[in-house]
Length: 292
Image (tube, rainbow, N blue to C red; front, side, top):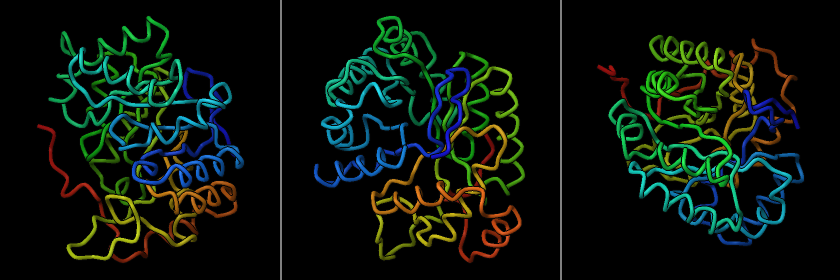
């Protein structure tokens, strides 16, 4: 399993993070099987959130036993200090652990959301307090949508977040405004040695109305191995990207791991040929809008 260093944290993480959104609505047996598969294939970075249904509960039985062997991250979507602190403690209890390696302020995709998190009495204060208590080792931020790179750039100016987590795939990076803002974020993150990790690497498009939905993801994902290979090749080939989160469906996870294990066998030209010829490939976040 390919590993990369998580910014200034110095941790050697598998480039694919186990995205535990996939465990939000599965049985304990299914969760155990998926987590065990990840561990057997060298995945040592597990990323979850308080809002991912029963994911933290499903992780508990195995994660608590291998806690010292993995990098464990969770997220709080609360915006006030009091509510965020309660959620942090609840996450630890649900996962049966005493601490997490990374606590992320979740879904901060607009400047209004960032303001709410960073204002006096906001969620950032809870994260800093939890860090002082030793139950949170590092603090990061995540976001969705086309504004995420701009918002996260501003976030890094306000606070030394150790990590950022935001969307990136071939289609989105091909949008001039998104590419420009993503590259600007990468430059600042590099200066601060903040790790940039990405989501939605294999997202194809929003589900069409009335479309059969064979996957648990909230968007239509790619599920053909060759295309997944190309998607993985693309995001891992962007300089400075330390890793990506797997899609929210346990049945897609083995294909994603397979693509990572064969990373380097596909050329940039082949990936470009595959991804540029896909019909119906678009953004899952709707039409891009200005941050102004």
